Image (cartoon, rainbow, N blue to C red):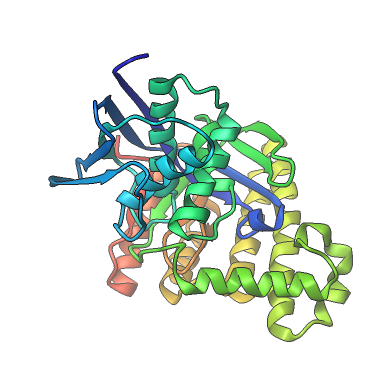
Length: 355
């Protein structure tokens, strides 16, 4: 067995399919250039000593078997070892050094990148027979069972299986995956709104609960089992639950349409789907904010942009745009400048990175 191991895992942006994964629906993420790097070295005791390049003066420790949540970013490391131990993996003590360029609170899966990079390193260190899908399942369990964030599996699957230059069309019920190449005529742009996002907050959990309440009234366990032909039944629900169900059902349909648009390299159609998705998140699922709505509106009005939408769980985070190939960075800089003039917030361009 090796004494040291290291691995990387990328953040992701979701092109389409927001709040569908915990209803066994469809999602369409792609990885971003930013990634987390994990270096692991064995110890001869039962302790984990973790440090991060972002906090060079801080080193946090815990004893294996005595993991306890409530320690900030260390919870994701503790969650990895606790979750592996519950699955019968004998883990030695280790020193962990993390470096990451995935921004926190931007809705681009910094937590999944951390979990997957650590799990990949431990897989190498311990020679674990864990494939990439199982690794994503374990990473999701870290968040749902240890950290306490009720997330679906999209982020972890994207970080574990995603590859540059393609979208990952994922059926979260079966975990079947299709790799869809991104057409050379378009460019993905991601802008951080500057409003921090978190999955562990009450609003995300409330939306999830409301959507399951709607599913129960429709007689199904998951809204994946309701399609657009049932919109009349959805409209008969109490107004708030109708909005929640309508978003999930129509968003699933938009994912399927977005895959078809990518295959056909139909940028105009893809952009229209982006715009419709944002309107649904804003009005039906109510996960946007006034500042993000303004950022999206500015982007939608730019001549190089086909469409724009909030991406991720919402209540802050980033927006994703589809732009003409070769014009994305200039468009993004102009959009950020207008956003700052109008809101006072300095949007940060994450993708494409500076040349």
